[in-house]
Length: 321
Image 1 (cartoon, rainbow, N blue to C red):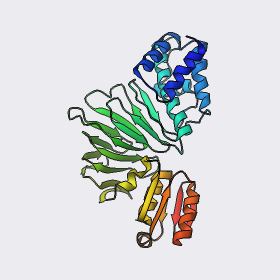
Image 2: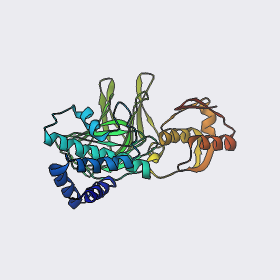
Image 3: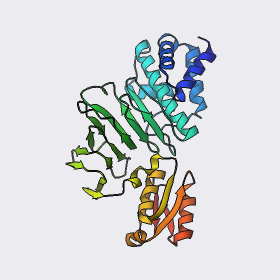
Image 4: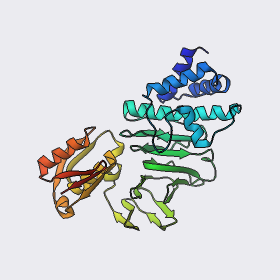
């Protein structure tokens, strides 16, 4: 296969154009020629098109080294391992590349041991092998193992995700984070698990069961949020749209309390917003639309409209007062 044809196939794969024919050709090419200099150059060219976007949390920006770090360095002569690593590398390269260029990404994966990722200030949309859908918020990763189709459909989340799980009563869907496990049969919910921030689960439809070493077993009903605060876990009724609005291309607020708007902005921009006077924020209602404006521009508009002031306490911590 000519180098231009290889680049075209990888390009289609990176754009989420995963027809059965494309995947078939891609796999055959990997199994035969991925280790050739020509094939390596084609893969690296696609990665370079992404601007060599740095991958945080200790991962490398090189797609070949990336998978070695995740799975452990294997023998250079083990072609099967290398081929599988390259499949995963292209999946991750495609995810990050399209997230940066387009803001959202779409893809269907049926290959083992892979990572779905969204870059900082971007979001990702994926269809899982069981047809479940997942939206990844800024700087998030979802890990799927080759045991996804085992007794349980298990994934691991770092960051924030909104799930629409295909119902399968014989194979529960389980989301693992560092602090909790969420088990469902088929439903819609969000899970937040950013490092250094409170974990939470918000249920939009159906029911979920939440457990964990320090989490009391809890069954949530639609419109309920389980969150940690000061070392304790509590359930409260919420407007679920506050916690799911970030999955869209814009957020529209129509006479919404500023306290609720602040919570939506937290998820949209992946920041923390502290309210100095919660009672005042509850009494102020605003109407406006957020698309992809810088956060500070939105805060300045809120300041002008409402008279509420803001200050940046840290790169990801804002106070309204």
